Image 1 (cartoon, helix red, strand yellow):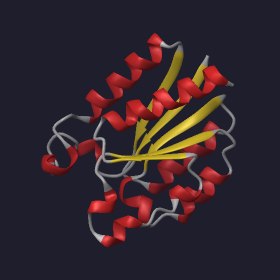
Image 2 (tube, rainbow, N blue to C red):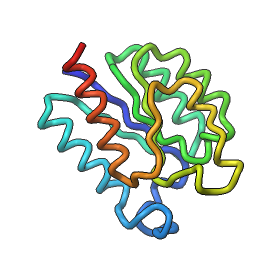
Image 3 (tube, helix red, strand yellow):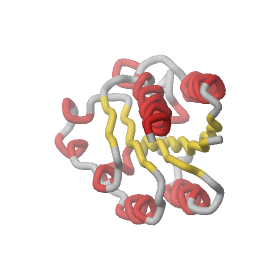
Image 4 (tube, helix red, strand yellow):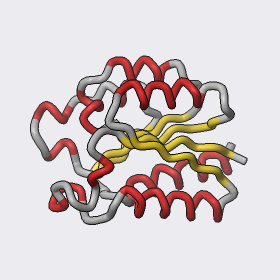
Length: 147
């Protein structure tokens, strides 16, 4: 069974109520449940984690190196633009990495146009709302089928 770690960065626990005009009305539980369902139908295993702490995300990436995780889907949120530490942790992970953003970061403030995580990511999805997570999982599933 292919195992995927889904990491949600800071403030994503507030989805559905925080700036819904930008991030939508779906909650983090809605997103995770859709991922669990899609993964189960395709014989995959998902572990989802949200943390407002950089170290919590890094610890999860480190654990994924040794627990059979094949891929990481990560929305690092604000850490996208600031965290060399998350980049370094992802560089130590040998599986696939897909970076996801709910909003189109390129239509927003200029500081959001730079991503440290993108330097490691095998793919980047931005601006599709919660569907971006499902698109990331679909890309991983389809890629494994072709391999």
